[in-house]
Every structure is written in C-alpha cells, then in structure tokens.
Image (cartoon, rainbow, N blue to C red; front, side, top):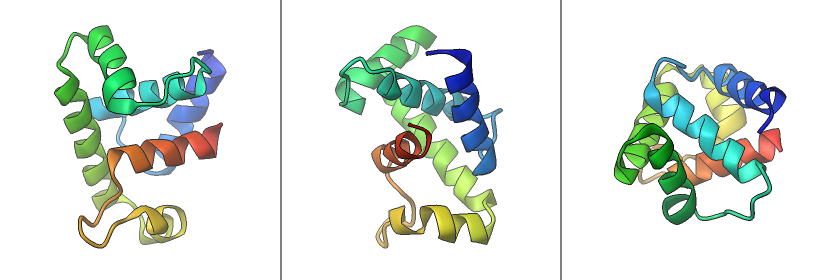
Length: 112
C-alpha cells in the first residue's frame, strides 16, 4: 500500500484519538491497509491476522488482543462528541465497545 493511503489511515486513527504509541495502532493500520489493498482477503482471523503476525513475529492471538486493547483505551479517551457521532452505532449494549471486526470494517468504509 502506498504512503498516501497509510497516512490517511494514520490520520483517521489520530482523529479518533487513538494513541500511536500503543502497539495495536500499527496492527489496525496494517489490517486496514491489507483489506483496502485489493488482494481479495476478507477474513481477519484466518487471513489478515496471520499476515500481520508473521510480519511482526508475534502470535495471531496477540494481534487480536492488542487491537482490542487499543480500541478499549481509545474509547475511554475519546471525546463524547466523536464517540456518539462516529462510533455510537457500533457500540454494543452488552460489551460497551465495538468488536475488532466492526471497528476495522468501519475504518475501511471511512478510508476506502
């Protein structure tokens, strides 16, 4: 994926007040880049996470957990306006946060 697309992904994450210092930030960026890259890859856990895990030398479960953690932490720091306007429909009543898949698909729709 080109630098411009990666910059758009990073800018969107920053707009949503995601901390770039958290490791899950780069994993989300890479997930979105892969999904928008037009490779015909759609399954996060079976196709995308293994690619990212291999790239960074970590376990597939680590990718999922790190992304989940960065979403949780970012939701806590996010302004109420952004939370309601941007992500309100994604937040489940049971868990109080969007799933990893919901959030990544949201980003793909916003950026793609």
